[in-house]
Amino acid sequence: MSGTVPTSHLSKLPKNATPVTKKANKDFFESLDFENKQDYEDADRGLIAPCENRIENLNIQNQPSPDTVNPSLWRNVQLQAKSGLYKVVEGVYQVRGLSLATVIFVEGKRGVIVIDTSSSNSAADAAIELYFSHRPKRPVTAIIISQSHADHFGGTHSILQYAETSTIPIIVPEHFTQEMFSENVLLGPIMSRRASYQFGIGLPVGEQGFLSAGIGTVFHSGNGFEMPNREIKEEIEQLTIDGINFEFLLTPNTEAPAEMHFYIQDYKVLFVSENVNKTMHQIYTIRGAKTRDTLEWVKAIDKTIDLSISKEIDALVMAHAWPVWGKEQAFEHLVLQRDLYKYIHDQTIRLANHGYTMEEIAEELKLPEPLDQYWGNRGYYGTLKHNSKGIYNFYLGYYSGHPSDLDPLPQVESGQKYVSYMGGSAHVVKQAKADFENGQYRWVAQVLKHVVMAEPDNKEAKELLADTFEQLGYQAESANWRNSYLIGASELRNGTRKKGAIAKGHSGMMLKMPFDEFFKLLSVRLNGPKAADKKMIMNVSLSDVEEKYTIYLENCVLNKSNKLDDNPDLSFISNKATFYAIVSGILDPREAVTSNKLELFGDQTKLDEFLNLLDHFDQFINIVTP
Picture 1 (spheres, one colour):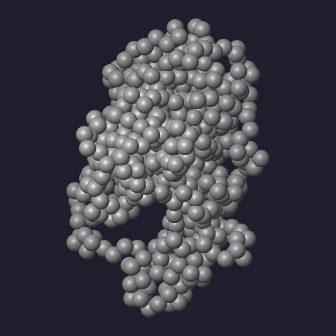
Picture 2 (tube, helix red, strand yellow; picture 1 turned 180 degrees about the horizontal axis):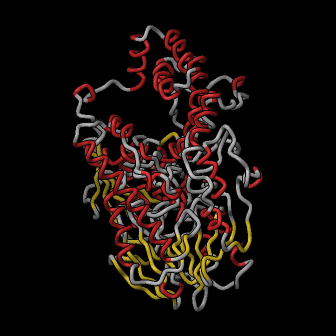
Picture 3 (cartoon, helix red, strand yellow; picture 1 turned 90 degrees about the vertical axis):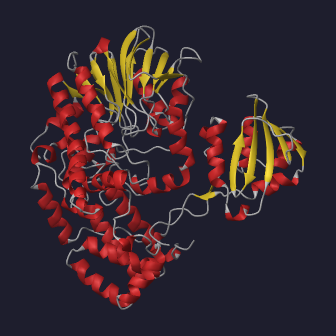
């Protein structure tokens, strides 16, 4: 793939806000009630000890928003930067600011119950050490993981180092493991690449770069996943954990495919995971996860309200924000979040039934004032435009209904045609410069994409598109949009951050996968055209788990059986880790044979033939260039 630029261009720095962007941000400031400081009071409440935050040294507190940041997003950055150990109520503590997701510590009779372990081992270590430095150092007696996204479980391995035994409960919602592997491994390479745009990975921290992910200021990579040993399977399930009474509510197919809320009776605390936030969340996430079922999301909040009406609630706790205290305030927040998603859903479908297309609905839809002016509903993470498009796509798919959209040319070929029809790239760039000066950034971005796709070495077009992305980023209220625009600008100027690395599996998580889940990954790596006319039968015996399978290659697809074939071309005997490592390209089969980790029987050339049919994925594919 092409897309890198000469080294001499790597020193290009971000540019300042244009007069158009300055005015846009000033107008935005005047449209919202910045005198309302309740969130600041709540975010400061209960602080026991601060911790260092990724953007702490920017000294952003009590500072006006700079020209290069949307003022509403700047407010979000200030709030999310408040980090440390906080007391929610006596016996329940929250660590914020060390990862995207918060870590909750619930004090039990013998030790401490950890709710969500953050996104990495390093973040989890820092969180529990901060807690132990101010609270009694007692063993971890249970772990509760509220949902199947990696920022909620990535530090589990580290938390287990503090456990009272090696077999403490790791409690998860039903189907957690299946959904976790599906998202984090099956589509790992492309989703990781797109996530680098969403989370601004690689951007310098500062007023012209990264400030927030919308739901936090820190993004950690590195995973300490451990297999859970207890699933919540009933919609409503009561469980006593280390002497503390929990009432769980399953909320599947909401923000995460596997998710749950719970009420901690002894402490009068309601935990709503990531279905309720201090921002509009994403019905469709731009990193590319499955579109969420909005009505199931609404139903989950509604059931939580119904189940909580008769309960005492001292605090409402969320996975990505500071708490809300008091039952009245908690219910107000739940209702406004519920009605936010219900309104977007219902009005999107109404407009669709009037014949509006996905793009037209996104441009037309506006929130009513009570929902729009509520700070907890602002679009720092999800956005109204993308959420309406996600809902449209959930029901009707990406196709607009217009026959011209049945089989359009792909972006490079269409870019070449557009540029030709428009009179050539020089003419397009000349007009785009004029529109840029007039602040028509959305259109300039739209039209210059075609030039760059048609002529990826067109320096003038790439520079102007980078400048355009930058101004759109400076104006964006959504952290996701800001990060994506600014990463796009950076990669147009400098190329991708890193080239040539090959993803050969997420080894830590991958080695824990059940064979059925690993086989899904193996199947999508098969290069179908290369496998034309190939037929193969391979028996696989996994000695350590006493499992036997047959893998069949025929018709350019892989299928499997849970028993051995009587006439294989090749028989493969090893432990599970060795088999996974060999077919993932981590371990050379000859080395495995020499070290007695692998036994092969039959036509041994078939193994090399099979391995040569499997693709490895480039983690740094081009996005803003072909």
